Amino acid sequence: MPLYQGRGLSTRSNLAFSGTVEDAVLVTISAAVEGATDEAVVRKLITQVGAELGPVYGKYGKASLREKRTGYVNAARRAPWIVLVDLDHDAPCPPPLRSDWVPVQVPFLCFRVAVRAVEAWLLADADALAAFLGVSRNRIPRDPESLQDPKTAMVNLARASRRTAIRADMVPRDGSGRPIGPAYASRLIEFASSPWRPDIAAQRSDSLRRALACLEKLTNVV
Image (tube, rainbow, N blue to C red; front, top):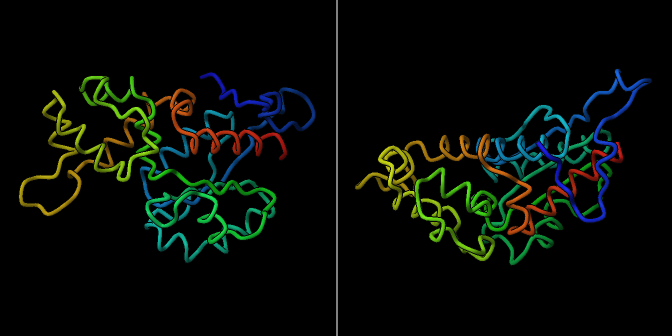
């Protein structure tokens, strides 16, 4: 898999060396995320920049992640970490949300905000997503970061799928009162883990581009 080629970033030192080339080991980056879909996305991003995913914490929603953020921030003073949260409608843009969560600079922390949700990052790889969902490429939003509710946009795309299994898994059943289908997260994890191409998606998602650039930089300073 080709490494993400961020502007002004080097891909020369994605390995931390100890002695000879034969002794090279991947930089390990720990993570804290809102849920299982975010974990799959982070795993793909870290692989993309030539690093290795370490322990993953959180996965019980944004409120729980926020409560425990001090521990993650303190850990990132000594070792590489990424904390990924959705912007949702908590702030107009990422900087105020970051300032609220992490008001100081931390040496080895990538605190990244998906605008407005991690679904937008998946929507940004339009060709791969269209093929995965079984919908026309023209149905994929051209500017996923402008969407007010990327999750609903994803569900509506699944609703238009030519594949019965996609509709059954991702679209909420009539009368369920739920916003998503019973295997919505599982399908997104499947997509993020295999056909999704972060380097391609980053061309249509600035917050994703910045996340990749931050991780790339982290692998070069450790």
